[in-house]
Image (tube, rainbow, N blue to C red; front, side):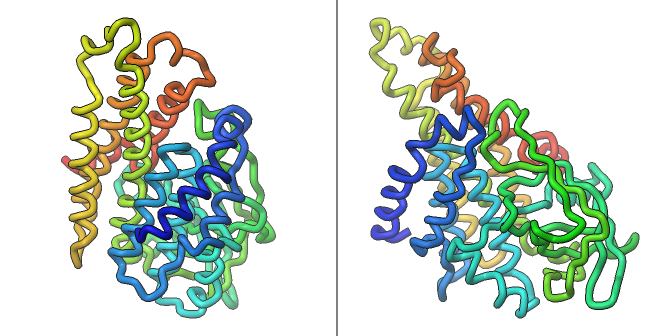
Length: 348
């Protein structure tokens, strides 16, 4: 990301996110304004840049945000996933209608692909079913948890048309037949605007269909979908490393006897980011190569936050402490689809 944009992001993080981190963590506050400001500042625009340049900038945005608040970085990942779907579709009318608004932040997007990704890994059946109707499809079913939602938002989803065919679509949150129930009883990430979504014959017009061959479409978007998750862990690791470094002189330097130290965590984190950036620069990316980095990032994040808790000692064991928040964030990252066990299964 060019220097000017880095400075704009740094200012937005300072003014629009840092003051709200505790409110996000403790009161389930949704930092919607920060997400919209990213678009207004032009930080989500693709322009005429290459795919690797666009993805690289997205990775930077997620990492820098996660270093301050992974809940909000996760919401940003949801939006970037939706952007990826719209950028990839061959439905030019859908792209023309939605892409400008998603890039300028006037429309926020989400991804309802947790269940489909598990379906393609042989872990679950598809929760949504579709049937043809004049002008489009009627979609019914329940998605247990979709994040970064609001009444004027949209999200991607996949429904089974029959045993052989699945369709992928963009659903507007104000669609008739769509109802929500907010979920704020998680260990962390309650400020992620997460809802269970119940669809009862929700009409999806043909101009909102991303692909009528969802299997092939998912294979196309999956590398980017997973790549954008990796800096969630890298950002939390960065924050943990800095926190560990600040405690070095406490209690007469007693932390030096702990087995996990900041330099080793930093070395592992730098190597993972190098692998990721090298991978996305390739013309063709094997999604399993991205998945391996994603799995390593999940384990590194868990290692980093545990070390952070131990280095900070008793001060970390307060619910409102930054290390405790990062600990909860890391366990969410470990269970974000594709989860650690999901990744371990597909990477055998």
